[in-house]
Length: 210
Image 1 (cartoon, helix red, strand yellow):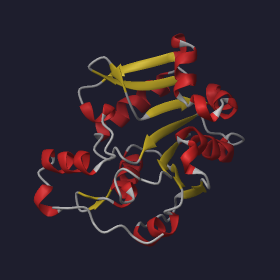
Image 2 (cartoon, helix red, strand yellow; image 1 turned 90 degrees about the horizontal axis):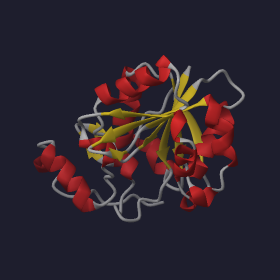
Image 3 (cartoon, one colour; image 1 turned 180 degrees about the vertical axis):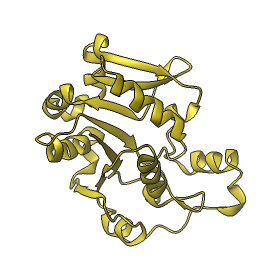
Image 4 (cartoon, helix red, strand yellow; image 1 turned 30 degrees about the vertical axis):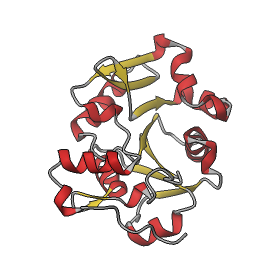
């Protein structure tokens, strides 16, 4: 089994609005990512939430999704990954697809090819690569779960990826979305413009009260 760990615990300071709740294609960033995971055949889906948890739970149907709370999201993504891994490390989970919620525009085909490459074996970590740059989402195999759990927060998951190049499979893809963060209002507007959705969401919604 492969589990999806969707990172949605950040405070979205630069965006000024919870990124998980940003409107996108008639849905939200978070719901879009969850739907893609389901379509890719990932049955165990986990969402790591932070201080915006109450607002997100009120807006997104998370039935059938495992919730993980990160009380200190400012510590960075690795801590969120660790909290999720603690829930699955003792279960029969072969790998974890780690997906940042601010990349809802990653095509399903990219996710499928990453999962297929992981299932082929021979790589403990599978990453997408576009134009020579590695991006997200990343598939981490059980072989590196303990290493991720033991890595100091300030080093980040990247330290695990870089520790041993021989165990990493970089899959070349033709979609720049894998290297794009949508974490500012300008980046969000650019995403909507490229998706022909700018007119449907002309400005950011008012941020909900925490």
